[in-house]
Image (tube, rainbow, N blue to C red):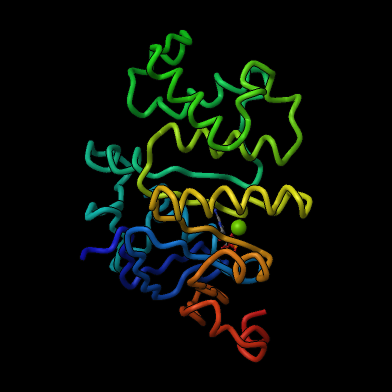
Length: 249
Ligand code: ADP
Ligand code: MG
């Protein structure tokens, strides 16, 4: 079966900084939950951004396909890339909620890839879209907060709302970049439990970057480790020995 994410010989150079990614080959199959680990600056975020097509790899280097669609842009977005991007839910370390909007309004913005922009601007959403947003909030245990301002929530609660926003988009793939790095341990576990549930229960493909190796071990059956832009390890979590960890960090 064609992998959901297919990366072939991808390299990325940022000016004088040198290579952020170096000959990356990576397949992620449908329904996998993969933990991407590695020290700060090893290229984790850069790799995730390439998967969305927001960043273009070096010329003559390989490329990225998501759901069979090549994601490289040459500045312009073609319709196919736009459609594929709508099937990718993205979760950020800093949640990126709009503080002045209510929780449900934030979640509804997750439908924007599928509705005309003017409706979003006017806050005009159909009942079925509101119902879908409430269902997503229920999924992350935040339905009671639907009409509160996003700015009133704790970090862990904001991240749960951000996950609900991604779910409302009804994605096939979830990319999460350090989703628990700003959270206390209890909130971090809660967020990882939710991501794990989305993977196990809904069968969504999840690729999550994690600073903390322990979380990757506990939640991801497969771990990919980057060091200086290269993949040093790609195997079952149980194969990640202390000796290998020493080489990675
Ligand atoms: P990680 O997410 O693992 O901490 P990053 O992907 O953010 O690593 O960064 C990998 C390398 O690429 C770092 O050396 C970083 O300085 C460099 N880098 C990332 N983005 C840019 C950019 N927009 N311009 C220049 N260098 C960048
Ligand atoms: Mg990063």
